[in-house]
Length: 286
Image (cartoon, rainbow, N blue to C red; front, top):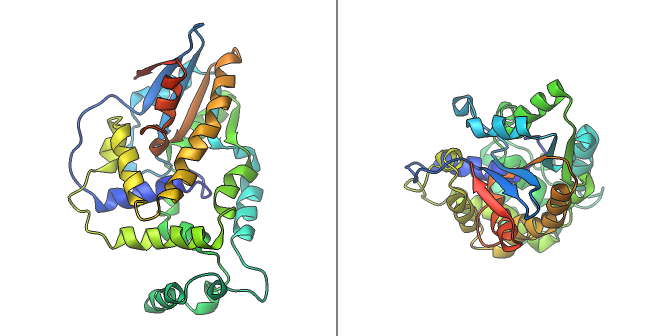
């Protein structure tokens, strides 16, 4: 994924920490059919992948070939400008600093954390907690270039297929930029809490994704936010509900869309798959 896509870096981090096997399934690609026969394809993405994760499951190429238009979480047309807007939103104005917006204990922990890594205080003291979370939880940039979205973007450009976003750049950025102080601090603390947990006997998230185990992906992601469940609602559930009317419009459009979102958005009672089924659509896991 692009550097602005942020949900699956958390899954990537968990995948490094976890090992094990999951039950075999098909893939994280679904064929969605309406009662009047209109079709849409829905795919779950890992926004950052490793070279060993290629080739992708064949269902991704199959859905791409069967579609006339591609949709990602955010509109790629914003590009660098949207990313710069996110960075600007993640910094306090001159004269303000992080210590004015978090608990003193949190700031003291951050000061010690960065000191151990040789990072001077003036390098982070104007960054908001959610931007620090994005920076610290992001996998290596080269893994973003191997993410599902990047792979499909290259194919779309080569075949002149248009790409759209479920969210505008402003909407996408506001998932983080709209956090208040308490929420932003909770998000950052969640990252440190999860990093300190011994989850070495947990599931292998890459295998769960490759085998289409969307429920395991959703459950593990939700569990990572168990100390601050409202963060999971903001990052996942609320956005899933907002996307459904747009996905329904795609189904009615007369075009065949391939909608690709983070795999953690698919499973669970508030996941995109359950929400579409509850509206009477037929979903076939490919």
